[in-house]
Length: 516
Image (cartoon, rainbow, N blue to C red; front, side, top):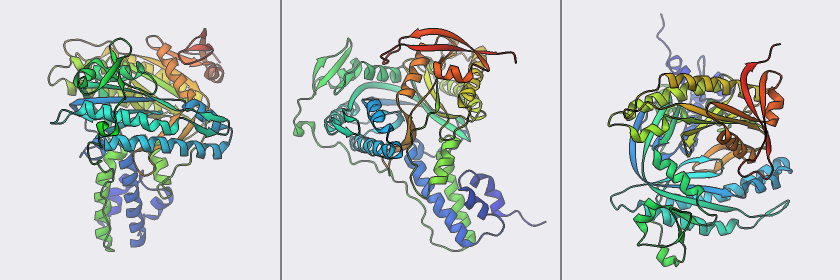
C-alpha cells in the first residue's frame, strides 16, 4: 500500500480556505508552481483574517474549539453614529455608483476614527452596524479612563470633517455620541472548531452601553465610575442623572499628543524562499496552523466570500434587501457577575453550547449568525438571511430558524446551570424584519474591518426584538406577508417604536403551521 499523500492529510483543512478552481488544481500531482500559488493565496488570506479579528483573537495562540474565559479590567467606549440612514437613502437611488460613493464616505469616517483609537491606546473589539466597541485596557499607569476620554474628544473634534457631506439628495450631517465606563468584564471564547465567537459579559458591559445611550450627540458622556477617575483632570457639566458630559475647552497642548505609538495591525507572514515541493508543503501546513484559529471566528458564508475575493482584496458594496433577525438571549450572560471563583468556565461552557445550537439552527437554513454582541439585558445575537447568499424564500427560512432557536432556548432553561447559587431564568426575545440595507466591508481598507450590514432595516429589527415579550417572536408586516401561507401570524396592531416617526403594524409569529 502506498503511503498517504501529504495533500490527502490536509485536504479537509484546505477545502474551506481555497477558491474552487485552486482547490481543484491541487489534487493529483500538482506542480510546484500551483503549490506556490496556494501558499501565496493563504498568505493573503492570513492578512485579511488578521484584519477581520480583534487583536485578542489574532495575536493569541487560540485553538479552535477551546472554551476560555478571562476577567479583564479597563475602560470601555461605545460610539453611535447619527445620520447614517439619511446618508444611505441619499445614495441608494444611484445603484452601484451610489454604493461605491457611500462606501467611500464611510471608509473615510471609519479610517479616521480607527486611527485615533489605535494611536490613543485603544483596541477596536467589534463593529455593530455603524457603532463601535472599544476597550482601553488597564495598565500599570492606571490611566485607561483618561486615555479613553482623550480619544473620545479627539474623535468628536474629527467629526467636524463630516458635518456637511454633499450627496445626490443634498447635504447630510453626521454626528456621533460617545459613552465611556470603567470597570471589569468577562471575556469568553465559545463555540466549536468550525465556528467560534468572542463575547464580553458582565454588568459593566451593559453599563458602558447605557452610558452611550444616555449621552448627547457631539459630546463625550461618562458614567459615575469613569467620572470619579478623571474628575480632577477635566471639566464637566451634568448630563442625565448619574452621568457627566466632558467640557472640551482644552487647548491642543492640554489635550496632548497621542499616548502611545500605535500597535501595528500587520501580522508577519511567511515569505517563501524555496521551490522544493516538500518544503513548500511544510510552509503551507505551518500557515494553516495560524489561519484556522482566526477563520473559526468568521461565519462560513462570509469566510467563503473572503476566500473567493482574496485575490482582488475587495468585496463590492451593494444595496440588497435581506431578512434580519435579532435574538436577545437573556439569563446566562447576566450570570457572569454572580459567578463564584472557578464557575466562569462552567458559565462559558453552557453559553458555548447555546451558541453552537443556535448557530446550527441558522446555518442549516441558509442563514448567517454574524455575531453575539452587547445589550442592556442579556446578549444580542445578530442573524442575516439573504446576504451574502440570497434565496427566494429568506423570510420563510428566518421564520423557521426563529422557531427552532426559541425551542433551543426553552430547552436550555430546563437544564440551566447554577451560577453563584442561583439558577438563571433563560429565555429570549426575537425580532424579524426585511428591507433595504447597505452591505460592504466596513472599516479601514487595509486595516481593521468587517463585512457588515447597515441601515434602518437593521435598526428597526432591534426595535422589534426589544418590543417582544418573553419567548415571543415579533415580525414586521413585510415578513408577515411573506410567511403567512405557512405560519399563523397574530396581529398586534399599530405599535409606536423608538426612532420611528409613524407606528408600525406588527405581528406575533406562531409555531403553529396552517393545515394544508
